[in-house]
Image 1 (cartoon, rainbow, N blue to C red):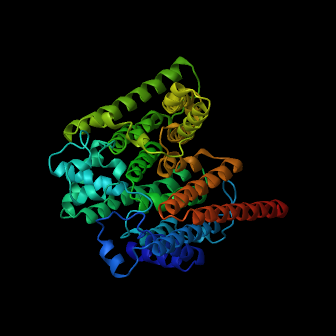
Image 2: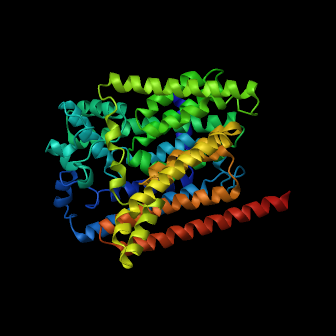
Image 3: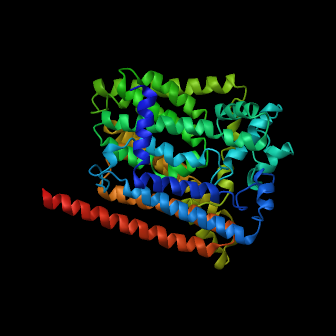
Amino acid sequence: MTFWGERWRQLLEAWRVTDVRRGMYGTLLIAVGSLTPAYLPRNSPWWPIMRWAHLDNPVAKVAFNILVLAGVALLVQAWFRLRPLGGAGHGIAETWHDLRHWAVLAIWGAPFFFAPPIFSHDAYSYAAQGWMLHNGVDPYQQGPGVLPGGFADQVAWVWRFTPAPYGPFALQLSHLLVDVSGYDPYIAALLMRIPALVGVGLIGLCIPRLATLMRVDPAFAAWFATLNPVLVIDFIGGAHNDSLMMGLVVFALYVAHKVRWGWLPAAVVVAIAATIKQPALLAAYVLPLVRRPWRTFAPSDGAIVIFRAVVALGLATGVFALISVVTGLYFGWYNAVNVPGLVVTVSPFTVLGQGLQLLFESVGWRQAAEVSVRYSRAVGLVASVVVLAVGAVTVARRRPITYLAWSYLAVALFAPALHSWYVLWGGLLLPLARPSAKVVRAAIVATIVLLSYAAVNLSMRNGAIALGVAALAAYGFQVWAHERQANAEVAKETADV
């Protein structure tokens, strides 16, 4: 059988599985529900169709909202039911080992390919920044609103006059895709899925292979990382450039683990990833440790490891700087590092600061209230630096990918702004860290919490907060039922043994 014939056979095998089709029905509902007026820009080409069909009204908002919430529930249920037997935290799907995770991911993601960006307007911002470059305007100095028109009109108001925080290669990719689109604002935003799909492809290709090299259950790694509903919705549906960043990081880790001296070319790959989004640079430190851990503090061992780590960091930083100069954009992103924190999110330290602000205002401490959020965020940044530094000389010495997974999670959780796609930085690597059953359970709950937050946010935009609250209860019940079934499977396996 030819290569493509075998791929087609695997797709058909996956399609025959009821739970795979259930997940696809879920993403299809989400894709249709994304036509809600709550998320479509006012100049979207979908609006004439919506008005013609009389779908631009409060009733339509509620209907589309229900479709999205139901779609998320179906996708989560399918994900739970495909959880493989054995591995970290056990599972329930006997059919998993007969499937190819890439085929399941392709089927689930297919309805999103031509849908508007899901749960986020970031893809519209990417397109607008590419349009700015086409017109000779530096996105690091101006916001999209400096060029009034179709591209700027798609951008959410909060980002319309803010500079771009992304790496220079990401901006030049956006520029290229704007040119390919024929300068059509909506088509350009849809084309932003191309880099995201490349990232998803690298993740799906490398995570199971990396798990096999590390003697970690590849089925569980593929299930948790590549089929995670947050990845499907945010990376494919939302077209976030975090997808390409993490795809390159995972590929670099695979090369470093697979090839002797592979950490050198892997450092170059990490540098390219950092020109998409800067947090990728953190991976450069662990690359030499993947094949040669830092086992002791003996001078003969430590000196070699430290030298390699310095070389890897220096090479990655140097290539990052070179690409920044070659693109002509240099390091202007530094002026926009505070941009993500301009919106209110569920970042733990931002929420803490807001709570302190309310407390201080209630007792009349106005000066303390004015600085509480800023100081709380500063504490979070300091805490993340401490976690990274301590882990670099403890956990990273013997378990470098475990260190990277938890470090990315710390950076995401302690930052001034938190989004679900930030959590995927470390979440994708978590199965490779040999997590305990309790950690897996917590990660699954966190996945559902992130999806629930998106559901509530959508419901608020549609003026149907009650639907969001109902979704919270429904998703919570799904987690409870899944954990109950998984525990029953564990007990059954134990009894059989």
